[in-house]
Image (cartoon, rainbow, N blue to C red; front, side, top):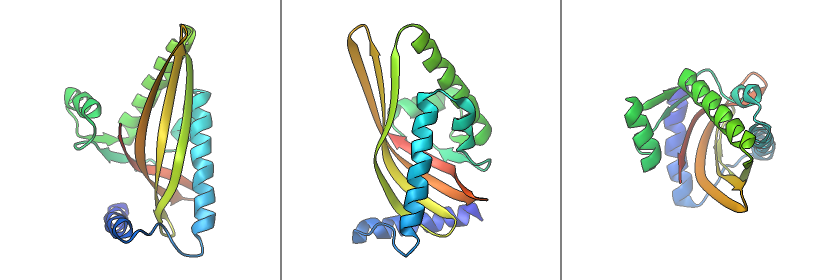
Length: 171
């Protein structure tokens, strides 16, 4: 069922982009607000390095295909010998990232996460797609390193909350 929704959303996304539309319908404001709140929760969870809160944002049916991702992600995935990121592997990567950022903080690096340029691209009753820019800032020894990634996230309404079921990023 989710795959069918993803195919429909992909077609709708192409049509919306070609026609200059984004979203639509009376529920757009409510869905937009709910998803902005989820993005704010994600930003807070990453800034607190709260692994449980980060993981709670993902649906158990999460998958991501990274064959056409940026070179860094593609090289990483090729090295691991995988092209599909499953929920379980994603949770392992969250653990690794949290541990890595904690290690950096223990070494005196200041880590900050921000999400900007949020847009609700498309939504139906239980599926939505958003785009946003994630900015990670590392500050240490008077230097600052900033990494930005544009992302598209597919959300599914599961119970009373929206969960990430797929995502893709490019730098």
